[in-house]
Structure formats: C-alpha cells, structure tokens
Image 1 (cartoon, rainbow, N blue to C red):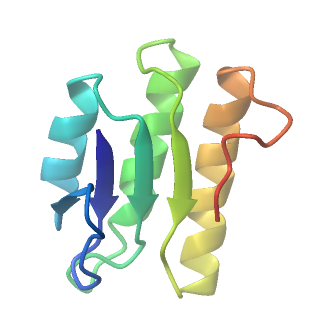
Image 2: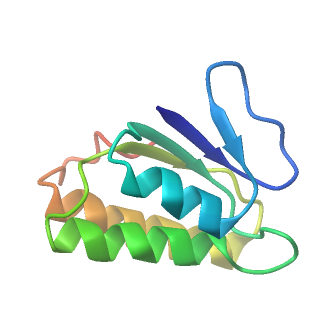
Length: 103
C-alpha cells in the first residue's frame, strides 16, 4: 500500500490518503505500507514528525518492514526532523546508501 499522509494535498491515484496521525499509524501497523509520503503540519500541528519518530522506533526494534518514503512538507525545520527520523529508520533497515530516501 502507498500511504499519503497530508491534510491538504490530495493524494495521487493509487495512494491511500489519510489526514491524521492516528489513521497513519493504524495503516502502518498493518505491515502493508510499502511507500510513505508524509507532511509535517497536519491540522496546524507538528504531527508528521510524530509519525516519522514512531516509524524510527519500530524500525530500530525490528517491528516494521522497510518502506520507501518522501517528505511533502514545505516547513523547513519540520522537513529536517522527518528526514532525520526516517534516515535513522533507513539505517536500522540496512539502507545506508539512501535508496529508500525519496524527497
């Protein structure tokens, strides 16, 4: 599944569109997400970083499969937080060469 997490930008065809952290994590817990597109500012809050940090923790523990990802955010500091967390997840998955990184 391709998961699009953004409260404003409409998901492209073929992506499941969710607008909240709760729905994003619910889908991630299924283990079926292969691709993630993530915004930082969801509903005017900095929720996207929480999704990225959740993925980072689960990747470190070996509880989530590797996924390809990209950041949708125009918020510079927020984008950096998400990139840092998901880059750490990539390293836990053994993707140190950046192949999983799609910005």
